[in-house]
Length: 257
Image (cartoon, rainbow, N blue to C red; front, side):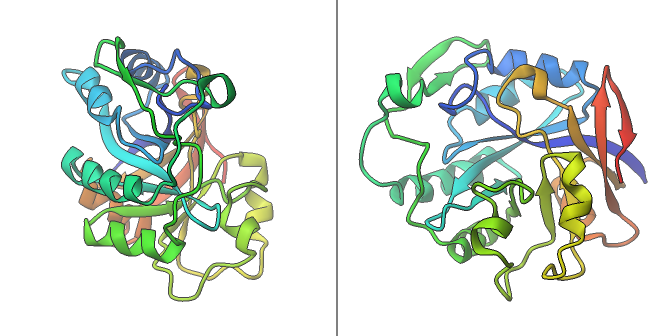
């Protein structure tokens, strides 16, 4: 086995709260500069720029996984990851059907840019993405599982949109293998929570909304190869595989646990 450094939570300029410099070529260049082996594109309630980032990374050593960050009806953020663009877009269709009606107002919420692989605008998403869907936490886990994807509760160390702080507990029977931490200094506080069940991993992601955030916090995945099935096994800690949280600077990483 070897270690692969990945950041599984990165937004593009499609997310209205992200900077407009978060274009596919800029994201790929910054991820490579940061020393990452792979990333996941996880815009709010949409996979509209996933394919463009994957195309921008073609011919480089960077692997890009397609995904979305879904906001549930409980106002919990869940990172949903998939092995192919097709399954990510199939899940996007489900999410779009569960978004409330209403269009984005750019001077209030920000722009939602649909981009090509060169970073050129090809349109603007009219739906308001920065809102809760009518999907429950359990429905997201169930729907993503049917598409053979992975669900990771996002930034559980934060007050807002966090599974632990919104609900105060992890619903029994929820098939969680990993929780995401967004700030290394909060790691011990999360581990000290007596309400947390045993047998899951803690990963670190940058939740990057700006280029300088990419790779600042990441995870080393110890696994045999860089495949989605290996990623799943590493998150579950199976067969000697494991994940280790790391912090990055200038292409170098140090363990933070």
